[in-house]
Length: 153
Image (cartoon, rainbow, N blue to C red; front, side, top):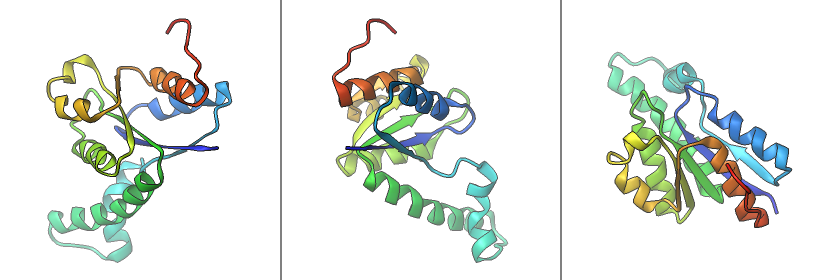
């Protein structure tokens, strides 16, 4: 069985690659999907495809709807959703993805630093695991798939 894992959240670090490399090293049967991580493409896709808008609200609205087609479809198909909240920016879209995943009955893993624990307490309460490092996500996947418990992190 190939496990489908959707990687949502911040786009300013290489955390997705860290997980993918660690999973590949372990030879785990995992297929990763993610939102469009090119910030400009994600923001501007709607107006580039469907036409310009005078107001920023409608510019963003068009892009958000097109991005939602991808996000909803891939989260619905996922076995596990991993959401990373970065240190610098507030990722409201990531919180929305986490809520959608839980509403769809998906297993949710959340990654964030301890200083965000209070702000994300409701998201954390819905998650099946809350971790601080991407490598921990790969260890969780290894455990869930193979029952392998690491000796140490």
